[in-house]
Image 1 (cartoon, each protein chain N blue to C red):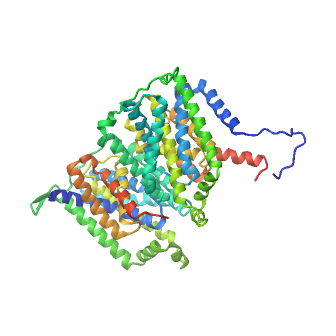
Image 2 (tube, one colour):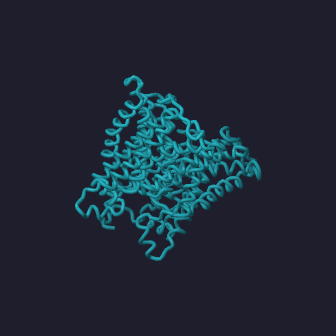
Image 3 (tube, each protein chain N blue to C red):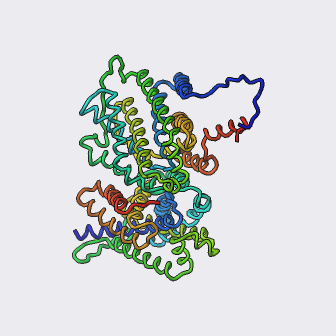
Length: 277
Length: 323
């Protein structure tokens, strides 16, 4: 039972990393960025590519993979998303979905469509409170908490962070102060994409790497964002871990239902607190 | 009308009445039969019905659903289960399929139509995922799970729907019926209201209309038509598999609607025929099908928002001197 909880926390940590970016772009620009799922997948594939070059050094390759997704997400922001700010939400969804289609096909072209397994990079098992857990999973949970803290500090104490928080509240008022909101949004976009890539990199050793791995994660992350509240960072954090644990618990009794249950919770959240725009 | 009356032109000009429109559509599909073959023509027609149902929601009400395969699949499973357990009468079974689609829409509508934009799209997708899970895993005992199940239908008097010409004729009749229904619906005050919800919902509310009810109603109709298309597909194939509910296939109908021209019934038909032609004839020559779809979608979003039908309609309007 306790080990299920621990596994749930790992899933929650990954979900948090992916959802934060989604929540921020969703809260500020009302754009659902399907390309987020693509960046997540790309991060995992880049890790796979860099591993042989760095002599199997996991953390070095992971850092390189995350950094390499920055230009890609910049390109997506610049060429696709920025041209759709304020135009129409529907077009943004379709366009970012088109980016995913193109990206997934490129991945299949470059790396092939077969799933690739990846070994646990630490390989040590820790025993805490009578529960044996791979050390790697503990590192993931710790990293997510560190990221959450760092983001909290970022939004509380830096100017960029404060502008973004203000824009989450009232975009037009911030623009009225003469601040180029869209530029800060693009920073947020790239930051969020980096975190998604980090999520992909960290999750890669737990499952196998395949071109469609981002699709389901993105959908579940979206459920996290809805349950936690759009653009609500604290809510996203709690919702991510709660849903992660719920998934693990469901998976323990009925493996196939672990993903469906998330959407049931999301539907329930929408019934209780509808999003009327 | 600004343009001057041309003295050479006869006084009684040709006008499009609903009957003539239906005749023209039927004629076009009948002409297409020798080119496409009966099998493919039936597929084309069924897909067109699906696009019409989708576009009622997207083009007319301005709500993009990313999970319309759910209602299509509900119709497909509805007709199969009805034929299996209740009656093999094809007409009743198709009605059951429509009912299944509409019922799912009716049940989920209150949750879904409250949202707009991205939420609307993704909630549909999430429900589609649940539906897919139900069909493949949870209810596998009844739906045949991954393998699917076959459906057989009784003859209706002299008509045997297993025969291709009969099926083609029936599908065409269904398309004309759907088209006529939507033609009347979109031209009615109800349709106008739905269109104004797309333009500015707050104002419609301000006029005192309960927009929630209209949105829900339109959603149910759209789901019902999608279920209709799903049911016809099963009547045609006599076999249902989870691929009829596959969430990954949603992009097909979105692409068709967008490329044809959203917000117009003819646009939906054009898009349906175009998408089916591309996927049937060009797909084997295109090595990277997904990439092709993605690039075409990007072009549609950035450069070609009115779609093929909208493009030509604009041109014709300009040539005729109308603004």
